[in-house]
Image 1 (tube, one colour):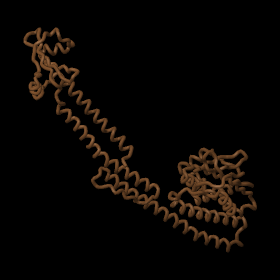
Image 2: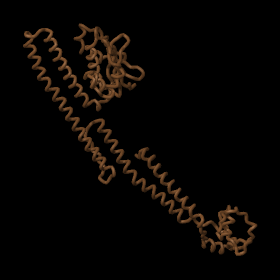
Image 3: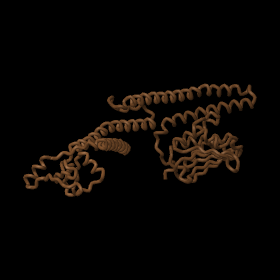
Image 4: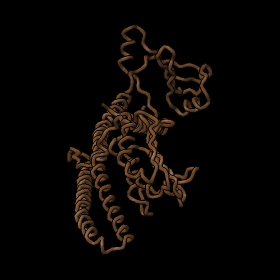
Length: 396
């Protein structure tokens, strides 16, 4: 199917060239109008003779003719003047040897259109076909490149454009293929290295835990508790990153499916039940179902709650719902709140810059928002404490 872009571009080029040729033709005729020559079709003259209506050549007084001054001047200069009649025939006039008389010849039927008119028409048709032949292969290859690059953006796998060597876009297609191969290799190396480093980190962590348990009697309780917290934090970071790394590779390929919000809240309540002895964590589901990538939403919720646990004093509220065409997953705590301006934090995560040290957790949530064409919203609520929301478009 011919695309609308191609039709618009083709018509633009064609009409522009036609207008250019028409303008050049008009300019040429204007330049040549002082040198016009009138030709009489001799076949028409013989035909009228056979029909008993031969064209007449006669002399008439000039005062019987009512020509504009410029036409009268041309007659005086010896030019032939043709006058078209309403019945399609023409009369021809020329100055006689006697100044007060003018030759009149005719009437003669209109001659057949000059060959040049047909040549002009053929030229326009040939021009249209030429541009069609030149432009269509280019647009066809451009559309093929667009499709392939979209596939690469979705799946991050090497692409094959299948553009022929004779195409003007063949060098570009080769560059795109090479670029897709290199990028996919870099992505695969990055994933392999990340998984390897994360897995290998767990072995020394296990040894550290074992050593700490053996040396517990020789350490002061406060040092033992601090070391234990650090080891658990590193272990949680590794686990979190492993979950994120596995999910990131497949997230763009997963469809937006219905998620049971009540079951999601129940699963989160069970995961964080161990913290209920010193914190009150409330889970609220305002809707029965939302659409999204279920493992990603669960991972984002876990990271939001884990982040709130670091600052909450007594209570954490977790809520999922829908408002103004947007799903939202909100976690708020009663801690000290945000020390930096919320707009600054949101800009950081919108551009993917996590250099300010706000942790892997919120970065993962910002990526989940990106997978859902949503956003991460951070602010301080009125009651005190921070409120972090993952918002994404609803599909109702």
